[in-house]
Length: 423
Image (cartoon, rainbow, N blue to C red; front, side, top):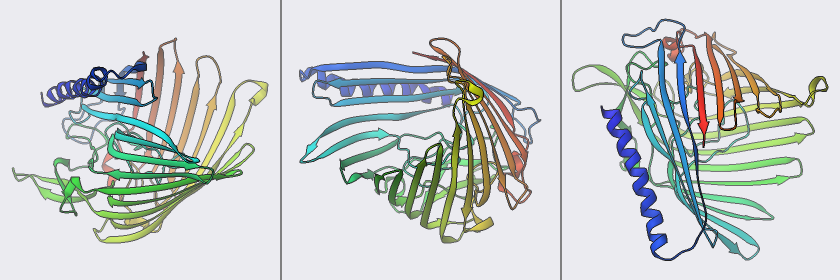
């Protein structure tokens, strides 16, 4: 009931926000030069082959996802984008959720020999160059109930200014509101033995989720080398997990967010079919697994190589290899199940058929070099018709070390099927 109410409120809020933006524009006589309404709606099913460890968890889960997007632009080129997100899940009430992924006003202009751009509202920002885990990517919060790999993001309120010229691109961010990470509920799979409380969120800052965070990034290309330098000062996006008691006396876990400062570097070197990649961060203020504040350095080094027109066909094959290092060692908190990215090897292969159906098959393996935690992922993407597309994925947890905090998810390998209609 709570999920249905939240869904209705979010839908009403999205429509209200759109009306709030468009109505004054229309009344002011501003000429709308272009607009577009698009998006997708998908039916999804997940099957967990192994029996669950905890009561109430299901072996099957189904639901649907709606991702509409509205775009409007005036005659001066100023635009507004609205992209809400709706998910209904039959198994886990926490996976039934809504979000505003994007809702921003875009302004732009010239300043001498430079170009400027300003985005005001809610947006999603993607930093980094590696395939398996983007260390430097810190602006948006992870929507963990969407997928255990942490690639899905919640929308982030922000003011995002960009200044560009021959010298490169400078981006400045003011982030006035913190989003807490989403986690599975009591009946959700891929959860810890104790449920993480989503109502009791703790912060180091007295301003709590209203702490004003700042970030900046400079990027440029120097021949075959693309470089990005970034800094972030504010509330951590990765929560520390602490034990606590509910009002009813049950033991559970709560999220605790510290204040951090992070410096980041991402670089990519292009040498023909080779792409050599590096990401590195230095972060101060995070808590390690024993709960102590610790400054640390983490890196990802790797690359990819593409074989074009394999076997004299139109298909391309790309191979990936990346190594993760975190100098906290086994004190590094886990980022996803299984593993901590503190000493891990990632390998993958992607076969793109380059056909009219845009068929792609991807297989990846992540293995902890110091523990027995390993996982395999295989995915298929294919367009079935002009507006229909298919996504099939299997996540296989080959083993989780008993010392890994995610040991209790060892039976949560799953197969996922998503059929989407794009409009």
